[in-house]
Image 1 (cartoon, rainbow, N blue to C red):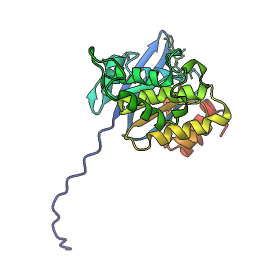
Image 2 (cartoon, rainbow, N blue to C red):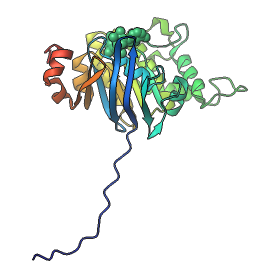
Image 3 (cartoon, helix red, strand yellow):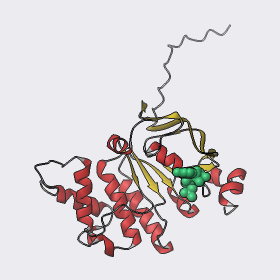
Length: 263
Ligand SMILES: Nc1ncnc2c1ncn2[C@@H]1O[C@H](COP(=O)(O)OP(=O)(O)OP(=O)(O)O)[C@@H](O)[C@H]1O
């Protein structure tokens, strides 16, 4: 008999807790099932695209994990803690921030003033007795604008700015809170073909040194392919594929129900 030396039992490395997890999420609007038993995990620092045809359930999913919509059943966990019942403001404070398809900016104000409002709202500088902009927060606001390549627009009124610049400003404002999870809703929609890659390059470079997990809803397959390390494809409220971009985009069901064979 081969007497192999006894090995000390090794404890298995504990798997990292996903920063964000959905467990068996369901949401219906009347007869329409917008989320059907969705379970998914997102690792810290991952860059994930959510794709799907119109009405597939992407926004419903994003709205649920950001607190804008309560699931009919199921749970949402942030760093392993149940946050299913949290409201949007609480989710933002906990580190789940989002930018919108139509940037939520104050048009008559300048970029730096908008950024100061974000710092004020983040509570990091807010005091009833201290106006926004005091104690160096303007320096921070300008530094954040600089990180997103927006220095030249800092003192310009938002109403005058091109669409791509507004998108960048909206995303930069969402980063003020140093979120754990950042959800970008169609970051390149309404942006010209020439602007979309420079915009995404800027966003990804600005986020490169952060541990932030980025989920972006996006229809543009060039953007999805270039900037995500994982794609989750939705169809009729379900996840039909979840893998590396090349795997998902060559999947038969994805080609049939999502891309129409465009890849
Ligand atoms: N508030 C609502 N009331 C009724 N039905 C809704 C509501 N929100 C979403 N739905 C329905 O739920 C389904 C999923 O919609 P959802 O907006 O999540 O899809 P989507 O993938 O984000 O689509 P799009 O790319 O067009 O934004 C659709 O059939 C939609 O009509």
